[in-house]
Image 1 (cartoon, one colour):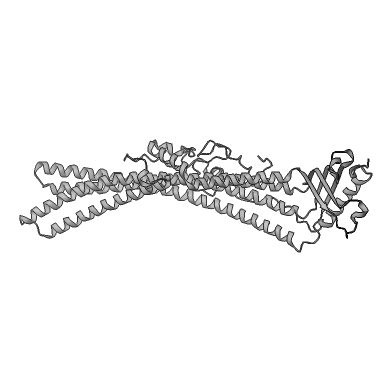
Image 2 (cartoon, one colour; image 1 turned 90 degrees about the vertical axis):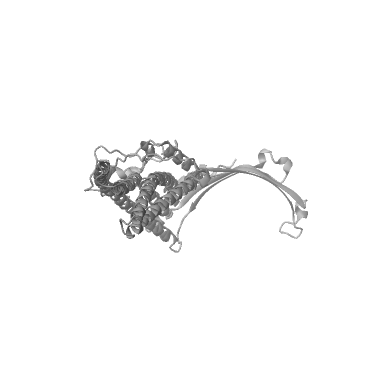
Length: 502
């Protein structure tokens, strides 16, 4: 039996010589390997007041408000939100890209079987009269295998780039979930604030109605001028206008909640007014360093940088020759009765080398595109970090400002309560009429309405601060939406690229 090409003397040396010659021919034009780009490894938050007792948000941060209605709304939103479904589909698409890249990098084996019946031309190169037949059958049965050697890392880096994209998609999924959660909570607390303000507005309308009746009575008795009635009517109209405005705001927020949950407004779960929860805002002491690992948008940008770096390696590997080997074993016969005889065996072994010699600048252009995409990914990452710093600083300072305003508002309410008590005391002693009491009560209701508004703003800012701190996102820990595991986090991107791939 004839020896296969792989066993012939000197074939290994000739293949090695061909590879060395191919590399030498292309080596002068191969660009240098890019090192990991320098990117920010901390968030510029120096100078912000931080609370040593304020920790990072928990994964299910909304449960700190102890509101079953809010828990139910967020649970429904996580099930019915199209944004979450879209983010999940991106994750699944990235996972399939990993499978596709992995499949292309391995050994490929295929089988074939065919039967062909053919008539020979009587005026062809070999006339049928010389062969003794005009028709013949050709049967082929075989197995083919091919393996591409990834000596330059092109396929390996393609797989790693796909893995990095999957990590980025997971982080983007968490970012989408956080956006939905915070929007639901913010809208719900806005509705609670509106309900509290509706109750105060109704009391204000009742108070202004009493003041209007007293003014009309005093005008009819000739005690006051007619202007006092018009003034009372104007104040009553303003109070009613405020009531209509707040009631409309509450209905709009309910419609927004229904949209976030993914149901019609009529199908929204029945919500009962309840007191607004307390607000405890603050920044963790290590916020400047740890924020990078706790914001899903920053994590996604980091993985995009990793993926772009791998793509530059893929583009660089295109300058090297491709080396592959294919093999075939099977049976072939023009006599189907002899198909499975030993003499019908066929074998083939084909080493191949494909060398890019002249591509018209295509390889250089592709490599330039990959470098530009890497630079864009780095710029996007740094921009995301700076945006995160601005977001945290803005929400933290706003929370501090609102806390100070609420303290002053509490003092103003206490002063108005004292004024109301003094007015009531004078009415009881007969020193003044009820107008002073009603006016003091209207002023107190106005200050209480301001307090509810500030409380609602403080809750909204608290939620925005939770979002700015990442909302409990942790790389390598269960996602805040489900029990599925997120991809393990990358190593510090200020050093070398991560070596581990999952």
